[in-house]
Amino acid sequence: MRGKRLALFGLLPLLVAAAPAPKPASWIDPTTGHRIVRVDDRPGNYGLYFNYNPFTPDGKRMIYLTPEGIRVADTANWTTRLVLKEKIDRLLFVGNRAAVAYYSTSPIGNEAASTIWSVDLDTGKRRRIADLPGGRIASINADDTLLAGHRELATPPAVIAAQGNRDPKTGSPTYAANGPDGKPLPFAVAKEQWMARRLAAGVPMEIFTIDIRTGERKTVTQSSDWLNHVLFSPSDPTLLMYCHEGPWQKVDRIWTIRTDGGQKTKVHQRTFQGEIAGHEYWAPDGRTIWYDLIQPMGVRWLASFDVVSGKRIWYRLGAGQGSYHFSSSPDNRLFSGDGNDEGKYISLFRPRADTNPRAPDTLDGDRLIAAGDLETQRLADLSKQDYTLEPNQHFTPDGQWLVYRANVEGKPAIYAVEVAKAK
Image (cartoon, rainbow, N blue to C red):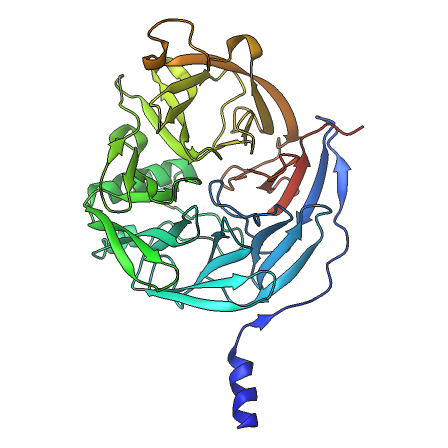
């Protein structure tokens, strides 16, 4: 019996209690004057997407993925250690109530059949939650009772299914296509073409929930639209936001729905031809949805919708303020952006005091869109960034740092930049 136990133990993932790594390198960005820490540059490091929570509820630890398994970084000094040695398909997020990380394992990957697991970051205890026939888990609700995700109910055409896999070295999606001249298209153009074909395929899909305690799976809604970006409100455990995925000009993208399938609501109604909206996310208050809104003639906004009151606030974005992703500070007072090819910075944005639109000054102010603008503070210079790798910045829960991923030193690495300027 003892030999059998030892053999079985050898098949289990290794729960690691290793000593922390040495203190990481840090320096002052010569362009911005802010302190930057290189958290990890191991080959294959992978940080979470901008709207997935990587932090424990006490804010003291941040999870990320390497080929050897799950690591945590101490947000006080950015030292890191391996906490679970296992081959993982997808690192998902940390719960809202407990220091528990969620992840999936799959022999195939890319939304094929998988098993969903949790691991307690304090004790190392693992738990098998459910087996999925396909699809992806994308969110956990406010009280850590439900997971939510999406899956295809039919197999998409092979030419579509073959695209979009993550590069194992960078974690970035891979898209490739040739133009009429037979030459490879730029990454962005190839991605746009693939997304248009995927939308046109009309593959039937569903959004579902999984009970974390029992593993029971329930359907929330089904559609032949391409469903993606399923996210629970951080404060309302039965409210989901999701998107109709595809080229933004071809879809009404942002929606909310209850876990019982009721109260389906479109968040943004297009008013101009060619108007696009996307990269939506929940503010930490759990009632405000922010999104990138671009209107004709290059008019760009950081726009919001309050799902409780119905109020809308739009901040006009000026030159150099465009970003692939925005995020909100934990106190909901500031924003961050990860830049783009027109302005390569990790930036902090402050609503101007004299244009803060939260207090309506007209009788019908509550039903009209309030408008303002933003002041910019540059935090990290990304002038050498190749934006096929998305920075996906996150505020730490204390609001003192922004964590992001970049290839400015010639390879992907995870960095943290201090919000306060170095003294």
